[in-house]
Length: 410
Ligand code: EZ4
Ligand code: CO
Figure 1: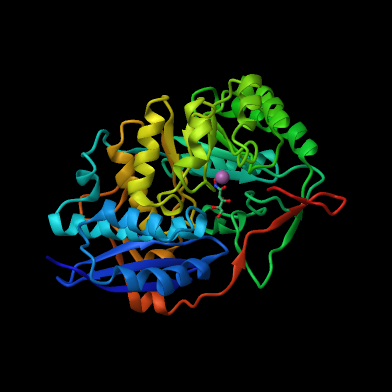
Figure 2 (figure 1 turned 45 degrees about the horizontal axis):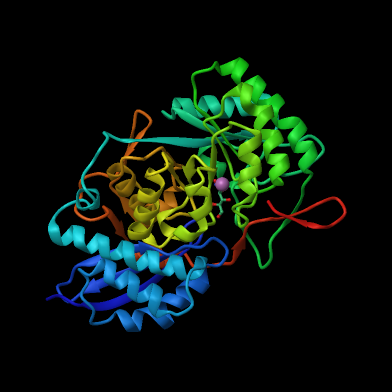
């Protein structure tokens, strides 16, 4: 029997920080897992290096479920983004090893493909309508069939999720920033101004682009349940594919209020990390799409369980796929998405060329569809020399304050 012989934590910063776990077996097979938690990278690195690596050595790499339970139950301190990202990294690395050992892509081990490719959506945004329209057109030219639309808000300055004026597709990292520096930048927020403005943007976008194209929007947890219900109603004429993170969902019952007010499809979960975070909103059918990332939800093993639970309630996947999910995390999501029946849509933004020089991927993007490829395992190679040339430096998401200085959800 092969055993786990070596566990390395690789940190790199090719335009943004990534933490990657590399597990090596006594047979010389290696597996990769993504352990990146945007803005808290070193906490996961320490969790893995100081507390997980030593107890993995000597274990059987084939025992994925048992290793998952060992790390989850064995820690005593369960759940939480740092723990669950660390467990996810181990889980995904073991799936990668199992695939390479079997000579099959991971999706084959999960039951095989149930579709030809994965419908993906990209992020269009702009300060004013002409820029938003240009951004949507650019995405259509790149092949996207579904598009998220984010807008600046009159009276507010830079808003998270919106590209700065003049940003081109290739240089659009500025709209989804973790800005380098020792502390986060601060943005001013006004929910009522946003709620007045947003429906006018969707009205204009539908008038310009017609009724067919699936449009999405991310509310970034900024509304109360009642406000979320109001905004959902106001957007109903524009037939959104989904409204994402309309309200913070730590209080899952809050979604009952939203659901009773609007038929707008809802997507939630990018900051959730276990099936328990979804218990009420799935079993009461309060959402339509699960937003989790493999990276932040305990890996393929645990997210598959969430999706099987969701399937009972006709709830589909809409896995988180921004660029702070590394290509390893993205590949893991693609293998899972290809194999589950209740796949819905996959978020996809191309990583920077620097990132792709460290992480060599075999997933493909064609006619608006993603496919994980047929390389055994996950299909991602990590170039350690390239990775080592980009040093970690702290970078944080902005924080939001109201005009009176109060901290706000963003
Ligand atoms: O803010 O990935 O839907 N996508 C998002 C992202 C998140 C970042 C947080 O790290 O909301 O842009
Ligand atoms: Co989001």
